[in-house]
Structures are given as C-alpha cells and as structure tokens.
Amino acid sequence: MQNIAPKLTHEQYEKNFAEIKPALSPAAAIAEANRCLYCYDSPCTKACPTHIDIPAFIKKIATRNMKGSAKTILESNWVALTCAKACPVAVLCEGACVFNAKSEPPIEIGLLQRYAMDEYFSSGMPALFTKAPAAGKSVGIIGSGPAGLACAAELALHGVEAIIYEAKDIPGGLDTWGIAPYKVRKEDSLKEVGLIESLGVTIKTGIKIGTNLQVDELLSKHDALFLGIGLGESHELAIEGENTPGVIGALQFIADVKREDWQNVVVGKRVAVIGAGNTAIDAATEARRLGAEQVLIVYRRSQHEMPAYGFEFDLAKTDGVQFYFLSAPVKVLGTESVTGLKCIKMELGEPDKQGRRSPKPVPGSEFILELDMVIKSIGQQTNAAFLQQLQDVVIESGKVVVDDVTYQTGNPKIFAGGDCINGGKEVVNAAYDGKRAALGIIQFLLG
Ligand code: SF4
Image (cartoon, rainbow, N blue to C red; front, side, top):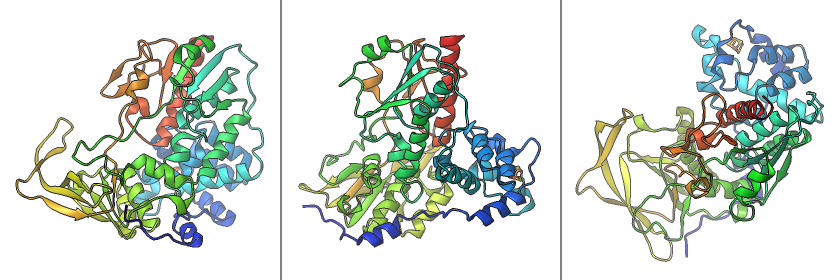
C-alpha cells in the first residue's frame, strides 16, 4: 500500500494552483503599453519564434484598439493566450527588449499579450478574419496540440477543409494536458480550441489512429495529412524495479493534475523526480502543491548542465524542492509499492558530441533515498509504433524528417510539425510549425 500524502482542502488546492503571474489591470496594461518605444526593426519580434508584430499589438493596446491588437497577435500565432502564459519570455521576446540594455525592466510583453487575448475572449471572440471560398480540398490532422490547431486554423482560412483527429477525450494536446495549472489552466487552452472550431475546423476526439481509424482510411479520405502527434511515452529508466506500483511518467502525472480533480490525484508523501528539465520541474512543484511532504529532484549531471530554465529552478526551490545533483538512480526499492530508490554518485568526465560532460558512476558511492513515489522525467520516446505505419515517412534521431520550408515528409501527401519534428521544444515553436506547414500544404494542394 503506497504511503500517500494527506489530502488538502479544496481551498488549499485552489490556492496552491492559483496563477503565479496574475493578469494586468486595464490601467496597468495601458501604462505598460505606453512605456514601449515601438522600436523600428524590433528585436522582440525577431526573438519571438512566431514573429508576432509586438510593437504593433502593444501600440493598439495603448490606443484601446483591443480588437486590432488581438488580430495582430492571431495573424502570427493561433494559440497566443497559452503562449502568453507559458512562453519562457525571459529568454525570448522580453529577453530581447531594448530596455534590458538600459538596465531597466523589459516591457511585460507576455502579460500584455495575455491582456489582449483575455479581452478578445471575454468580448465574445468577434470575427477578425475573412475565410477564402471553399477550395474543394480536405486535410486530416492527427493531434489537436498547438501544431495541429495552428495548421487547421490556417487551412480553414484558406478555404481548405480541416478535420482534426484527437485520441484523448478533450482536445488541446500539451496546451490542455501538459502545462502546470498555475501557468495555464485547461479552460485557457479550450478557449483557443473554441476559436479554431469557430473557423469551421472539425475536431473528432477519442479517435486513435491505427486503432479505431486506420492510416489508409485517412489517406484515401483526405488530400493530405498533417502529423501534429508530439512525442510518445516517457523514456524508461531501464533500472530494476521500474514497474513497481508508485513509479509513473511525468507526463501522465501532469495530465492527471490537469484534470483539476485534485483530491483524486495520487501523490506519495516522499517523491523523487528523475531528471531536471522543465517538465521535471513542473512535476516536482505540482507534487509539492498537491501536498507531498518531501520532493527531491535526482539528476545525474550538475546544476550547470541542468536543462531547466533558471526561473523554473528558482520556482522549484521556492516550493521547497530539494536537488540531488550528480546522482543517478540504480534500483527502485519495494515490492507492493515504492519504498525507496537506490542511487549512485556520479562525476563528470569528458564532453560528449554536444559538448556536455558525460557523467560516470563513482564506484562504491551508492546511497538510498526513502520514498513513496518516483516520477520519471528523462524525456519522451518517439511515437515509433505509429510512425512505422506511414510509408516513406523518414525518422532520424527520433525525429520525423521534413523539408525546412514546406514541412513535407518523404511521403508527399504527409506533412509534420511540432515536437515530432523538433524532439520537444516550446508551444510557440509548435504553433509556428503548424502555420508554416499549412502554407506548405496549401502550396502542394492548390499551387
Ligand atoms: Fe517595445 Fe521592447 Fe519591443 Fe522595443 S524591444 S518594441 S521597447 S517591447
């Protein structure tokens, strides 16, 4: 029987998962918008992977043209509310703002974008775009995450029928299921899903391609396919005891939390998260906020090599997460449930091909952590079983190979974008890929 953390009250859960970055008031948004210098050749726009015309949308906030501001944003990014809340702005747009060079705080671009999108959704999503006449073509999109949604929206605007097939019961992919609720709530992502549906896109949920609908059927039904399938399951730790009850993948744990049925999410009293990427940090902080008394992050390299952003690391430390650097798991202990994790100390050797120093075990340095739960967060596998069903779609280093401009795979009828082609980047990168791939598909179908 797993040693479970005591349940909190509903109010405590809501407090723990409340937004960590509150919205700007209208007065604060306008004041911040007026601080912008509306730079020519703006570096913030260049730093945004979707190249939103940032000075233009900020200027429209300053002049209270909220519809125009939302339009400027959506012209570049169809999941702009999620991105406003989840993007690592400190290393993207805000990191490039000219105010940094003056040692002044950068413009709060993320919060201003959120303000514009909140206003747009709360005003009932007025129509902003004119759709092209029906082109008589149809595209099947597999996956309703940011890449799939962006691709579908762009196709719909160009008069191409877009039908999204989603395996889960609720659409939105990682935007709905994979981002910590104190950053993005499920309802935020579903507002964006609603916007894309309002353009005439159909989303069919509960459809698992290869199980209750076959690839061949899709290829004969549609003129082209877009793969926005993301990545697959969490990588295995490949250690003894990995299948012990109480060991779970980080994405599964985060998705369980995103159901917002906090009382029924199982979390141990003492939890170890294996890995130190941004997903690992999300899982660790969520475990703490669900009531886990002790949460440890076990990472085989040092803090210096940790893939998580600095601000994510700071958030985890603020939440009381402890870090075991230069430590690797060797064996999960326990029979009926997790009781501990045997680890070994590591030291860094020579740099590998990517320039990262390779960790190697220190003989005789094993130690035991007493635990009730282990969350695996050492990356995700390629969805190989599915991809093998697609003729002429080439996989290299775990990524679907596409043309840089058109996003076409080795099979001319199949296009792809998002995590399945980049190995796992930000939502904003997937949104950009989806839009660009739609343009590639339009060129392929309509010339
Ligand atoms: Fe405004 Fe900063 Fe962008 Fe210049 S770099 S346009 S000041 S947000």
